[in-house]
Image 1 (cartoon, helix red, strand yellow):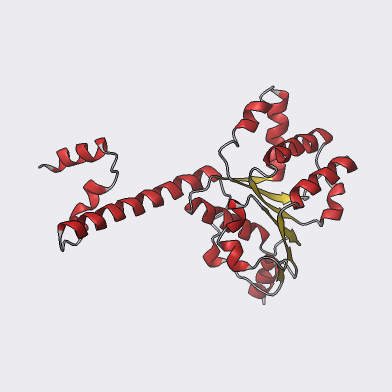
Image 2: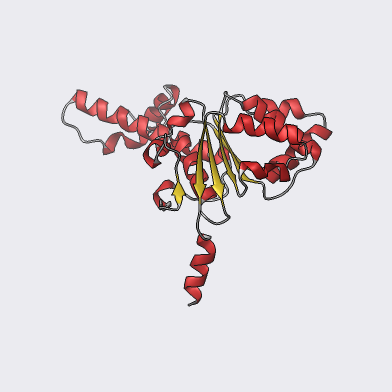
Length: 242
């Protein structure tokens, strides 16, 4: 059989990689060979799927769990720890993760890294800076396309909202974001980074009742991690200048 015909048959059977890898698989017996060949096909499919999901998530950095530095300045609630967090058990339980603390302490790095790990496990993830999401929401609302925008999240498992609290919202923006978070409540997992404690969220959400309702939905079933200490970026820059 020619390689061209083999490729056609593999394409018909939707075996995306077999025609390229079959010559690289060690042969001991037919059963072992087929098992190893199909296992490699599965691995390459999963890798390609993860890469597609990571691209669709639109992360803004290449941060990963391997490069994240855990330390004593990250305070965990009693019911979770780094191992449980990195195993992403909170996603199957549709729980939230809140990363709160000063700028530059690693919140966005960890949020991105958890999001990428979720993609590798087959979850649909979306990453937004909150200010950018508010801009999109106000735009689609004015264009009468809000419902279509909300429907984009039907198959999404995890939404990362980065930098909650860095920029105050308009009243309309706050209400639109509240609608989205209400849609996602107990249906999806949120990972939120913020430089503000919950008691200060009234600085960014104009209506105190809306703020209370939003916080209530966010912290219910949530793992709240507190990041303390100096900015890593500032410390790193100072150490370089010395």
